[in-house]
Image 1 (spheres, rainbow, N blue to C red):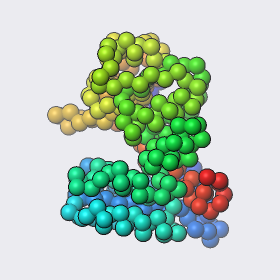
Image 2 (tube, rainbow, N blue to C red):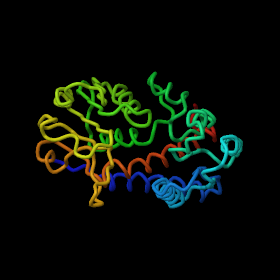
Image 3 (cartoon, rainbow, N blue to C red):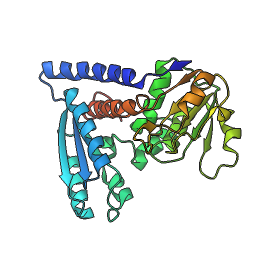
Amino acid sequence: MQIIDGKKIAQQERESLQKKVAALSSQKKRVPGLCTILVGDDAASQVYIRNKQKAVESCGMYNVHYQLSHTCSEEELLELIEKANQDQAIDGILVQLPLPKHINEKKVIYAIDPLKDVDGFHPENVGLLSIGTPRFVACTPKGVLRLLENINYDLTGKNAVVVGRSNIVGKPMAQLLLNKNATVTICHKDTQDLAFHTKQADVLVTAVGKPNLITKQHVKREAVILDVGINKLPNGKLTGDIDFDDVKNHVQAITPVPGGVGPMTIAMLLDNTFLAYQIHEGILST
């Protein structure tokens, strides 16, 4: 059984990007820029955005951050996004979700320039992924795929099961797996007999936010398990959607929580920002 060390792999990704950005600086060239926007004072969102800012700056990239009050208007946020769309020093724009209820999340996502949509949520980028020509891919599923690539796992012809159908993880994850020639099943809260489906999986990705939902009764031997779920238990301990201790000796490879998929999400945000920079500089085509 192999424990997939997402923390180590993410660090390798970040160090690689750090070298690329350092090379740009040494040549007196503009470095990639990311604009982060946080609306309100949600504690978890503040931690997430702070971690993203630190990662951007540690790689030598340029970061500008806007903190808006939870009472700000939708119009005010949209105006700020348009300002960032027009800013030539900004390659990527990230609006931390969720947003206050009075702001239309879809309208905000649509307002971001698709060429600066480093979250991969804009319909244009979702559409490009669906036809097999991805530009920006949502960071968490992109990170999951990078982990599979890191352990040299060939998805061709494999049965892949995704538990969860969110626009942020489940759907783009399924599309990525399909693009890699896996046979894909998507399960969700209305799926009947979940174990029937998950037992077919050579690769199982869970992203539902239900602690210890998947036990060894749900998985076949020698499966590869990637746990996207992050759940806080009453004792303060973090756990995933997988019952790690129950499953670990039953499978070929598994990601831990924490230290598995989580670190890859930020690493892929940096990767997408660098990709956006290359597009804006004309190094890569769109």
